[in-house]
Length: 85
Picture 1: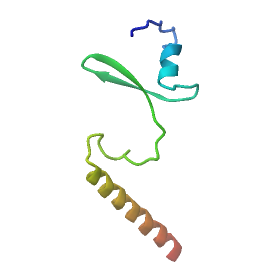
Picture 2: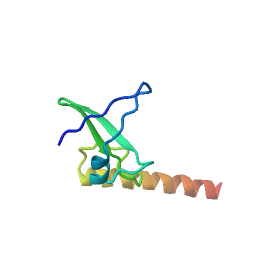
Picture 3: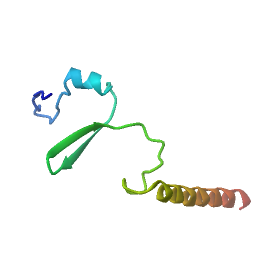
Picture 4: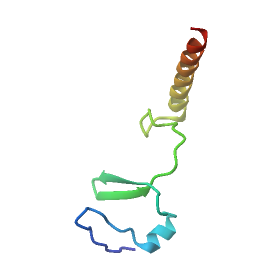
């Protein structure tokens, strides 16, 4: 399905209602614009817990877990250091 909308002078574009409903995009939601070889892709940004922000998208689950554990250790060390000083 293809739908057409216009871009305003402020650079704003309206996501057609049928697509907002299909992909559960509501006012206040964030969307991600990504450049691809085929053009621009728009995706709804899912709420993030913060995990995965410091590793590449193609990282394995094991790599992600290793980064998460390293960060958790650093946070614990810093927190514990603050309490003993």
